[in-house]
Image 1 (cartoon, rainbow over the protein chains, first blue to last red):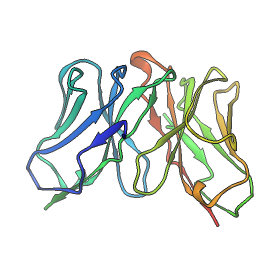
Image 2 (image 1 turned 180 degrees about the horizontal axis):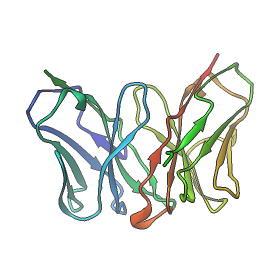
Image 3 (image 1 turned 90 degrees about the vertical axis):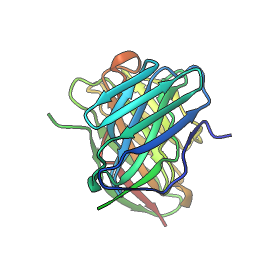
Image 4 (image 1 turned 180 degrees about the vertical axis):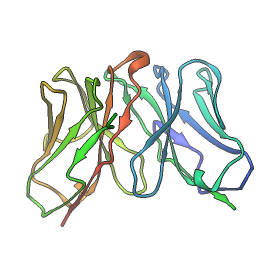
Length: 111
Length: 115
């Protein structure tokens, strides 16, 4: 069983719509949760992080965390073609609090 | 401020050879982590170093080793290369390895091709 599961893509949304990306994790000890964006051929770029249950907003991005359900999501409002990328969910786990990544969800925003 | 830097950007090796990848963290960051990303998958944790000490190791064979220097830069070494080692190797740095300052920032990566 994979430790971090993300909704299978690819996901396509029209420009201006809301994109919803979901992630579940198995390690109940995870305390920090990160979302990274990765353009093709590039390295992951931090979008935002969340530590506490509830919602956290940063511009067009909203992260939602529910530790009881072991679920974290990322909403992208007013999606733009430049948001087209692979989105990686990564809770921290282990003694080193290393990032444990899912396989990512590929998002395409159609003009 | 400069971000995380890695060298080289690309590398081609043959099976059985050895490779050394280098990473310089963001200024002030003391923790460095290494990840391997094969095509179509998320990055996988290899090592984490903090203050020159290994704090964690992922599920990788002993052919993989790393170290951190007094200036917090780091090297990843891979011996006896296999075709399956072909991947993007990512270095990430953070202020500290835990707590609110554990946010990791990635370098551009080193793309390794083993023939």
